[in-house]
Length: 307
Image 1 (cartoon, one colour):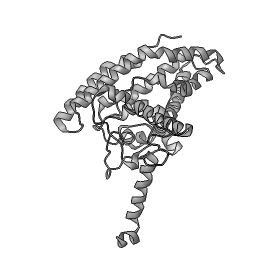
Image 2 (cartoon, rainbow, N blue to C red):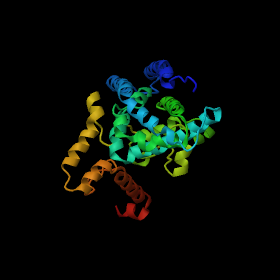
Image 3 (spheres, rainbow, N blue to C red):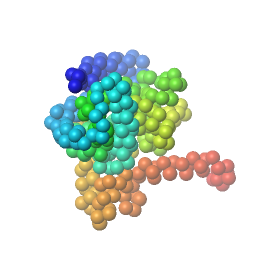
Image 4 (cartoon, helix red, strand yellow):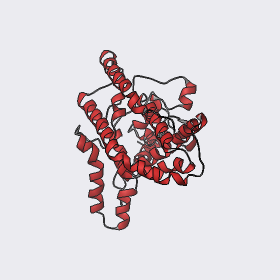
């Protein structure tokens, strides 16, 4: 096995330099927006994520070591294996990311990353602290190991995927050359993903290649006539890292404790974010349906005339 570096560790100096450069750009040109308390919260969440990775990452390592002997193939360390692993890992990331937005148990972890109402390079570092405890790595991370890719190779390409995603968290870069926009995930595409506009909700889950969203029907282009509004449907109104980390977990506990049946409890736990038994809360599906109804009313001349 080759001695692989940790891409994220290697990239940290570049992260720091680029965040500082974007801060200077924001101050001098207004091409990006920074709020000191929000940035401090994002950096604190990033530091906590690094510490939790050291403390809890062994859970995933142990699991992958346990299932490695059951791999279907014995895939070695050839260059093509790295390339294939990178592509397949990005496909797995797409589905993992998509379920993180549609299953509340996983959203409780992922919501941390979306909790900032600002969109800049520091937002990329706003990461959760309890990810290994959600066991998402078992559901989604096991596939490539069971195919026969070495766990160390999978960890390496997954880290490359995360490093790539750092630079797309910015408003300083507009739309890029059309072929790049068609194939790759770009700042424009990822701004849509972080937006709370109903048009943009639950879209553009890609990590590196936006082709997955185009293929599976979740792509939405950024529009000049509809600027992105960032954050979550109900913004937190706090910069406290503990609250940012735990708020949705505590909300799940409150809802499950107040549920009237097992099915209700499961709905609050495994249903989509915003699910409620009577439909009184605003899930993405409800918000999008309400928005579409308004759009149809505006485009129907008979309804406009009646008003």
